[in-house]
Length: 464
Image (cartoon, rainbow, N blue to C red; front, side, top):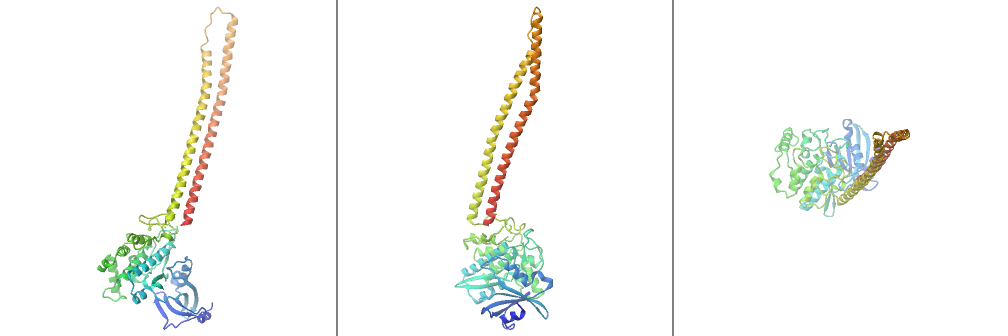
């Protein structure tokens, strides 16, 4: 689409139709003359120094995500040259209710509605993390709202400074844009240029939850202007202190616990991920189901695997934390897989024991043959070495016969001794063949067991 065609299709007044503005662009309400509908038009100047976080990259990243009810998706993105450089123009759905901040100001919500909104935001965060994305700029202004009857549905948007995780590395990475994001919702690691984890988004979630229930922020600039250096220093001091306002105690459980666990200054001690946060709500009876259904594969628990969040990108598939509640079908598959493996191991052990008696029978036969061979030899030796004494009166014929008998016995012994190596060699050959045959059988059985294990693991991964 050319720039002229774009301007013909989408019309707006930059002075009166502005919906919002941020550090990376502005959003306008525009009319689509082709489809006769209102849309949101986001415009952002392309900065060569921040090519990786330009608006077009954001649109492309979101387009790769599967569909989720709590994510706002772009429709198109165009790039056109202007007098002062290039600009990206992205089109997305226009939401009448505006963002979460506007909705909270314009509506009086009951606790059930607030809890529903927050739980859906948590599900959106969980979805992003499982797809390798850390948002890093979660705030009410970046959560668009839809109203369905009496229910409000949040849509997370504005992934301009989101960080894509590398599943081949640790989930801890450098804060490449230190201080990026709105200060009041930024985690301590963002403010103080420390390493970032997935739970940096859960700090922001804790601030949003606190504000949703109390109508105020947990950390502020005090008496100083928010844009002043003194105001920034006061905000940093409050965040770094780890102390929450006294009004926190008025928030009902289990949300009070969730907020306290999310707003822990030390990221290593903070709640690790969205699933762990949801488990607190499940334990408090707020929700009756786990949000673990979007789990990929630690890899993914990103988990894969989920393993410790500090060591892996995501939880490993099929791995559950203490206290988490996973899909029961997963447990059934794991149990069936374990049963098959145990059955195969029993089968292998049984075959091994059946082969062992056969080896013992072969040994007994060999020993029997040795006994039959050795005994005649002893008898012959006795006959040779201890011939019966004959009277000297016997004639020459008797002596010759005796000598012939001795010679005959010697020949027999020599013949038997010559045959002995042949028998020994045959015995060893038979034992070697039996051993090789047994090893081949055991190898085939081990291969069969490994094949079964691989099939079970593959089925579990496909299910996840």
